[in-house]
Image 1 (cartoon, rainbow, N blue to C red):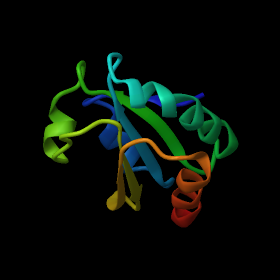
Image 2: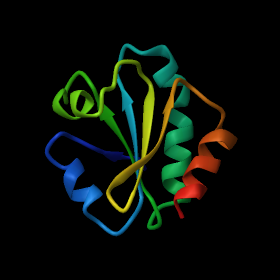
Image 3: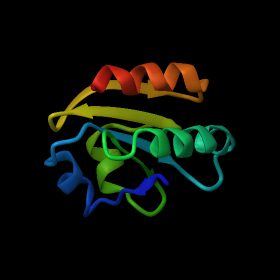
Image 4: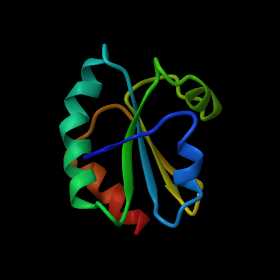
Length: 104
């Protein structure tokens, strides 16, 4: 299951030893709902290797502001605590999986 990232816990994950993928989303966002099952599948498949989760932009405003999130869905990819890739908009599973594999 995808993790639930918040303004208060994301830094802990970024300080950890695993790569991190953050899906910025909102309840009212159609494309966000379209990629939600893909994010869940990848979270299961890469459990223990990559921390994959979602951050609701309506409930958490500091982190989206910090990373300049202006459109959702936006996925940020972190390795060693550093932002290494970004994807805006919905994409197919194969595209997301390639980005996740690149973190390993």
